[in-house]
Length: 219
Image (cartoon, rainbow, N blue to C red; front, side, top):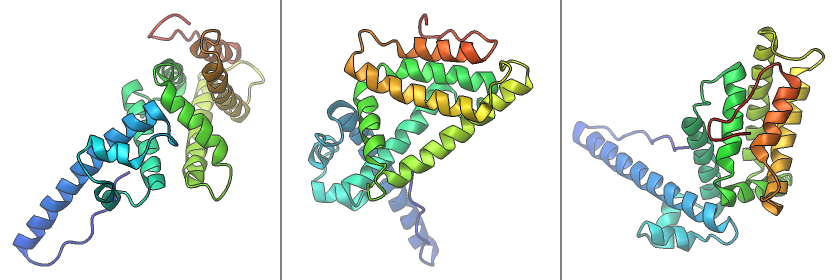
């Protein structure tokens, strides 16, 4: 997420300078987010420090805190950026119905390449059940959005006649989310024997009449 710019002061030249200053600030924020993404995905949230991030972009820790007031605020921005980049990478932002479900299979394949972030998500999603956790509101919003999006996909699949008899879209969405989350924990513990994409494909093929072959490799 990006901040909304403050109202510019009156006067043409001063407004121009404010816009330039804001653009420069936004560019720096994006640079920090990219560095934090790298630090948190390789070292995890606890081990990855603000100093590590600041060093990558040539700032002091105080300079970094000028753009993000806390490590928690930076974390939420990184998580949001990761979600946005996943949707762009896998073309799921506008996908509907079967296309969205296929996109989720590809997302599962992609997740096998980023164990650091998968671990980060597993730990934080559990920790954030505490209402006082800094990522609590983020994960509430995320689960609401993911669940709603997948319910819509299964509803559309049902309209097209590809959902097996007796399968309810809401139940299927909750089960798919639980499967994907649970598989991530098992995969982190033993990635040699857990085939995350294959298990997701098996579930989708059990409740629909379609085939779901990951584009990045066999299921």
